[in-house]
Image (tube, rainbow, N blue to C red; front, side, top):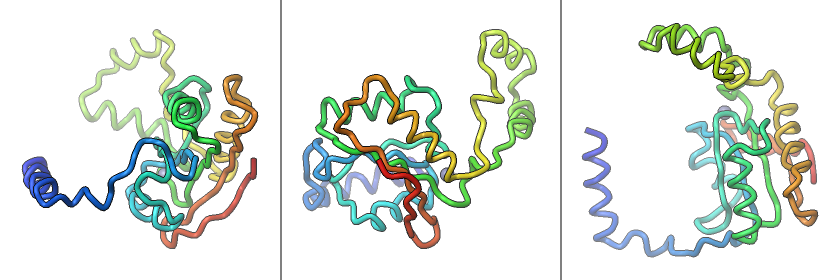
Length: 183
Ligand SMILES: [Zn+2]
């Protein structure tokens, strides 16, 4: 079972002190917060393609690097990184071939129903003001989406003026970065 394998590996990791080359503290050396997508292809590729080592940056992720609500948990993470952990710049990094591009809320709804979530639950959520369509909305253009996320951060009332917010798009196959908007 995967969990057991992980726990077994972890014992070995700790016993053999494999953590030693990774030692650092919680202040980002590059004074940067990266906000990117949770895509599996980026787990190792993105840090390597940007020459990011342990301790260099704060990294926050969600599905699609989509930020639309100025007080969601992503924005709170960014603000904590700035005010408590000395970050001075934010890089929003979307990627080509993202699962959130052309996301289909109707298909999601169908999948929820097929997995045992009832119409009643969906209706209750709907009546409580939770709109699945907008909560799980994706994007058509990754460049536009990155610009929009960057814009939500830049115009945040609690963002200090010295913070630069850049927007980029990475190729999940090669790691090539393209600048979309410079803060
Ligand atoms: Zn993605």
